[in-house]
Amino acid sequence: MTYQKILAAGLMVAIVCVFAGAGPPMADPQAVYQPEPPDDPPDTSGGGPHDDRDHEVVPSGPVIMRKLTPEEINRIRFLELRAFRLAATDTPDRVTVKIPRKTVDDFLLEMEGHKDFLGEPSRREFRKLTPPQKLHYIAKYKGDAFIDRVKIESDPEVFLEFRRRILPTVLRGCATSGCHNMSYDESTRFGLYKDPKRPNEKVYANFVLLSELQYDGMSVINRTQPDNSLLLTYMLPAKEVKESMRHPGAVELKPLFQSRAAPNYKRIERWIASLRQPAPSYGVSMINRYPTPLPAEPDEP
Image 1 (cartoon, rainbow, N blue to C red):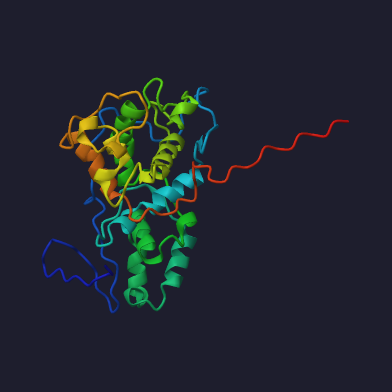
Image 2: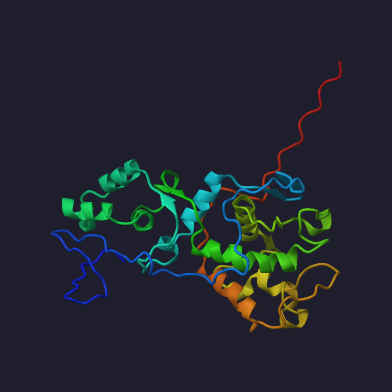
């Protein structure tokens, strides 16, 4: 959806200044989706004391698990904004974002001649928008062209839900003692960071890994068919899913959900469906698809 002229005509539905060229709609920054508040609000600062139990890089088989950098986290946040996931909306994510004046100037320069940015009044109206609104339209019009020229300092809505509701459920089911935690053995193939403080660098690393993982060609997170996500089928009783989608291994796991109608099952299913389709390239991978050879041993003197 492009900018549209909206004539208020006394109605308090929307207030938009209409000039000779259509200006950006003044989306209400408060009228955005708000996930349920967490039972225990997490520390989202990304800080916290260093946990010596977690290694910076944990190689095992095809997976190399590591904490993400602030730059990598920023890119992932940008690529899952509402501007990409919900093409028909003009309501931005409620995020804290820093957009340098130079970035705004360059964006408007690139938009010169576009029908939605004709005339100085229209460009002036854009400058009056809140930072989240500017971010929304920058992403909507220019894709990821400005991805490294903004700094998103808080979670977009899909990652708020992941941090507060989805990841804790996954960790209860998958990262219990002796399973997919960071002290896993080779038989479990990978481990997830299980840190009660939920720092950004670990939360987003877990998200990237879950997004990439597959088993026998089936995705742990299936964005096009959420109910076929292994993340969900592994949490159900064996009798509820076909054999190929049951958790592998000889040990029978205790299911988190008794049926697909369980509220938390439906919550995860809705969250998967809300992710961007198709999955973008986040520019970071936890799957070591191209193993590097061991360094050559030094020649003996």
